[in-house]
Length: 171
Image 1 (spheres, rainbow, N blue to C red):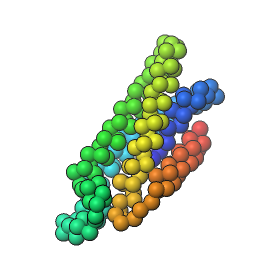
Image 2: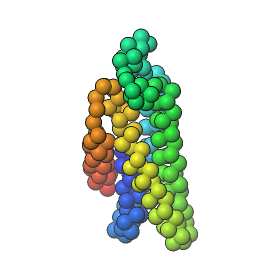
Image 3: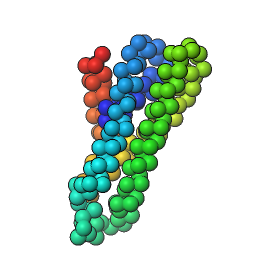
């Protein structure tokens, strides 16, 4: 969450054209480097402790009780594939934004800022679409029969607020 909050903050600053945050941009960029650590942690949980998600149980009773779309959506191979895709896309775009930001420090070329503005716009759109679904996958599917359309928004609010708090403390 802190890694995603960090890169979302950086992307938001680029897209909005904010100049005030340039002096502290390295802090959320450093926070964003927690994303690979979080990806490893999530992979360990999913692969070593799939029983956290009752619908993956060996008996299959919980999975058998699912109907319709949830039965298709909540199967372990598809779940793992989606999780890997979310993390891979987030990490790749994050690395591109941070790398381009560091290059600008070296040569001062404003083309790097323009590139990061485009990458940040792409990240915000992709993040908006995938974080909502990832929230459902990773948190809400612990109770597979629960339905909520606000859950992703609620998780985003917590992620962003926690990220801003961490940024303030680190600054």
